[in-house]
Length: 128
Image (cartoon, rainbow, N blue to C red; front, side, top):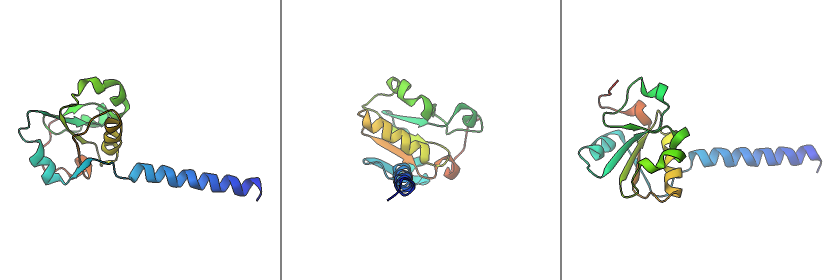
C-alpha cells in the first residue's frame, strides 16, 4: 500500500468514528418525546431544566423555567447543577443536549433526560 491509500483509510476511519460519536446514544440518558418531556418537567422540585443553546438562540424563545447553560460553557458551569437533581436538557434539535448529557454523565450525573427533537419539537408555550 502506498501512503495515499493508508491516508484515505485513516481519514475514512476517523470520519466514521466522528459521525458515530455524534449520533450514538448516551448510556443512561432518557430520550423523552415532547409530550413526555412536558409532563416530566411539571412541578418537579428536585429537578433542573437546562437549555444548552447559545444566548443568541435563547432570545428567540425558551421553555419557561429553563436555565441557560450553553454547551460551550457547561464544563465550567457544572457547579451550578446539583448531582442529586434530575437534569432535563434541551437544545434546538437534540444533538447538543445529547453532547451535554455525555459530559454530565462523565462527571457523575445520573438522572439525565433530554427532549427528542429539541425545542423545534416542543408543543408548549415559549417565553421570550
